[in-house]
Amino acid sequence: MKTFNSLTRLTVSIIGFALIGGLTMGSIYAHTGSHANSAKEQLEKSPRHGEWVKISTESGREVSAFIVFPEVKENAASVIVIHEIFGLTDWIRQVGDELAKAGFVAICPDFLSGMGPNGGGTDSFEGNSVRRAIRDLDPDQITADLKAVTKYVRDLPSTTDVVAVSGFCWGGRQSFRFATNDNSLKAAFVFYGSPPDAAALGKITCPVYGFYGESDNRINSTIESTKTAAASAGITYEPVIYAGVGHGFLRRGMAAEASEVQKTATREAWERWVNLLNK
Image 1 (tube, rainbow, N blue to C red):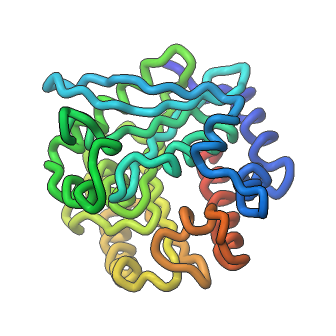
Image 2: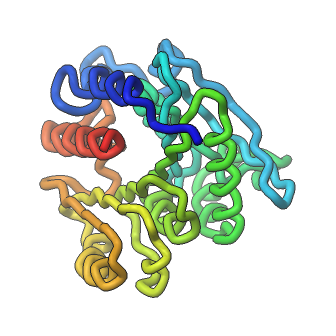
């Protein structure tokens, strides 16, 4: 069985914590000044290898995914990045690239693969139609897609067996829910996503780490009941609320117009995320 090599862990630690104890945040905030680059431009300038791949599920459905590889000497752990309700955007791919910069293989599946006009994915939808399409997705199909992505990334010759799942907004809920369907995950990272039913929490075998904005009561009102249900089920659920920000704060904090409060929350969330991935 492949293991999380100690040299890989050391490499990740050096890359991730050399400057501020977390991800090398200079790269994240390089595009928040007057010479800001868009997420797409940052991806184009990235020295890391990123590519689009096709992954087949057990039913034969094809899922498109963007995968980014770290520049490390040893096999690396993997992180699945589940997109927001906006679909697989350049920002999600940028998040994947930043995770690869920290030493992980990051894979970002498009859950609208083949479901758009002319068989397209996220990019084939216009306006709010992408949100409607995501809301209409079959939960069983989402689970099947994630299982296929997990198997794909775990079977790569450049990875270890260690796979974590993460998601934002709609994707945060899917990350939490997938943890109830896969007992092989190292951890689930939930960025401002709602929890599954309390009855399903007992199926979770990995720790779940929550990231929430202070001004997001729609989501935050579920935290206390989730903590109670998780404790009753004997699972680890560790939520953190970040001051001065609301829903979608990580994306907002990486934008060119981000306030200092938003930048601070984003920096702290990234530091925690990478630290936990290295745990």
